[in-house]
Length: 295
Image 1 (spheres, rainbow, N blue to C red):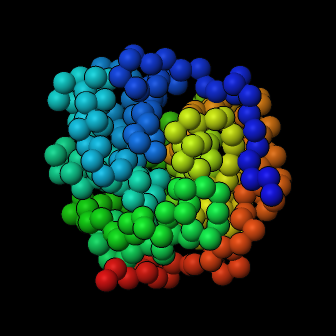
Image 2: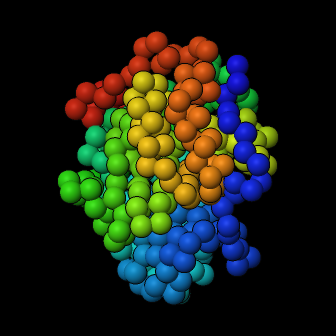
C-alpha cells in the first residue's frame, strides 16, 4: 500500500543555516532537528530576553541543545516569553519540565491535552502492528506517561490567538492526539503542523535519518483516531499553505507541496491509514481529557 506522496527537491523550503543546525525559513521563524523531531523558534534574530517563543520541546536529553540554539539566535541568556505545545507526546515534551523551570516560563497547550501535561493521564500505548519500519516496531517501548508542568500550564486563548506570536492563530487538529493543535499565519500562509501530518516517513529509521522529501499522514504508531486525523488534514489543506514546518522532516514550500497536501487530504484513507492497527477500527477517545489514567 502506498503511504506517502513523494516530493521533488524543489518542494523543500528556502532555508538559511548559520552552521549550528538551525534552519531559518522566514525572518522570524526557524527550526532545529533534534534526533528525530523538530523544535521551532518563533521570533526575529536578536529578539532578546522574552522576545521569542519556543514551539515544542524535543526529546529527553536535548535541553542544552535547545538552549544553545536559542541563545545563538536570540542572544545570550535570552528566554522565551512562552512555550507553546502542539501536543504532549514524549518526543515533543522531552525537555519541557527542565526548560520551563530553567526559563521560568508559561506553557500553553489545548485544554484537552492538559491531563497529559499535568501528571494526571497517560497516552494510549504505541502500536507496532501498523508496520512501516524500525521506529514503528519499537513504538510499544516509547514513553506514554505524562510530564507535569501543572504549575506553569495554561490553556491556549479561546479567541484563537497564540501568546507571544502576533499574527498567528491556533487550530484544533485532533487525531494524532486528542488536543493536538497546529499554528497558522495567514499573512504569509505559513503552517506549523506538529504531527498532524509530516514530511518524512516517521515509521522508518532510514527515512528519519536521511529525511527524503515525502508528505505523510501523522505517525501511524501513535495516531489514535484516524477519522479525526482525516478531518484535520482536510482542514489544513483547505488553507492552501505556502510553507509548512512539521514535527518530523524538512520544511516544505511552494505549489508542489500544496498539491501533495491536497492529494493527501483527498486520498487520506489509502495514503495515510495503515491496513491494520489497534486504533484503525477502534479509535481511542479522550473523556474529559483523562481517558488514560497514569499508574
